[in-house]
Image (cartoon, rainbow, N blue to C red):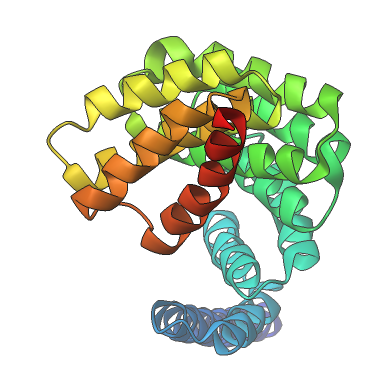
Length: 269
């Protein structure tokens, strides 16, 4: 009986030590998590990354699945903001494996893949899977804008068409979003679909009637469209009106006016 009682005391003491150790680890995890969030808010990304990695190291024996995903998402965000896109993508992939194929993780993985130079082939599957799941509309749109920038920079006709199809799919629900129209119009210009681009810019100008500065952005895009169409006199008139209104990018407008005058005067002669 005494022997049994002694074993019981040892077990109890062992549990106390174990629980105490877990408690200390949890405190360490919380400390580094809080420090990481503070540094992230201060835009001290390297310090935030270091803190979140320390938290993950302590987490290794803490067995707190939800908290692990939370810290891992902060770590990936800090890496992304620090320009460490490969590392961010690796951690978003880890989140997708551990936390399920959530739309937000897919969109963020897509953005990291674009920034990491994975190309359309490496980034688009994340976007397409996120599209099927729904999720945060604004985050999904931001991901689409990044894909569009990548396609425009590459200039490949097939990639531009792939992204254009993605825009077209979202158009019915986003046609009252002036930012969406601006980005869509820019993509269409790159795809040399100038009539469609002009229509997007016109719709954007109408939507932003209450915001003179924002409306000028669309008016400047319309003028550029007319220039690309070869409608030099009309483009010159539009740019001149913008200059006189004091809206738009003055340096760019003056440059375009100087160029268009040579075209218009040349055709008159």
